[in-house]
Picture 1 (cartoon, rainbow, N blue to C red):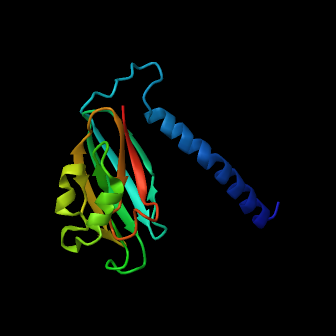
Picture 2 (picture 1 turned 90 degrees about the horizontal axis):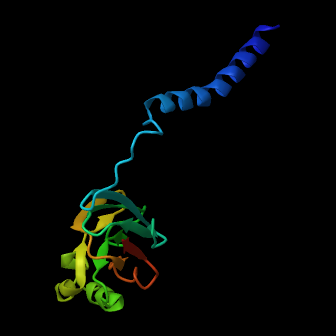
Amino acid sequence: MTRHSLCAALCTVALTLSPALALAQAAKTAPKADAPKAKAAAGAVKNFTVTGTDNMRFAPAVLRVKAGDTVKVTLKAVSALPKMAMAHNFVLLKAGADAAAVATAGSTARDTNFVSPKSKAQIIAASPLAGGGETVTVEFTAPAAGKYQFICTFPAHFQAGMVGQLIVE
């Protein structure tokens, strides 16, 4: 066997075994299957990272929590555009809130992160603005069971479809 074919054979073996070894290592540190599973208690902290991009969509667009959970949403903006041209926020609306009215009122509220003070009664939580490469965080207590809409109130983003849903069980 030549030196080259020996190296090729060893590389093939190493590449084949690497995933298996990693899996075996993970299995050693994973909890045992027969261990009792603890139920997540209401009031637990739920962390989410939501991305907003130039296509004016949230990803993920659906978040699930339990009523009473502490919810921490980190909004990450991915854009090459300047912040004054493309930024995002995360605005969680109360049940029955008029999303279009909140977005329209917010479109002229540059000084308050495009969240109009007139809309405060319709909002559960709102993050600051995040421009490309920035992250912002908003924390709130999950409301009663139901479906709640979250939107971006930067001008024209809601109208372009930048909406999501918080499902509270």
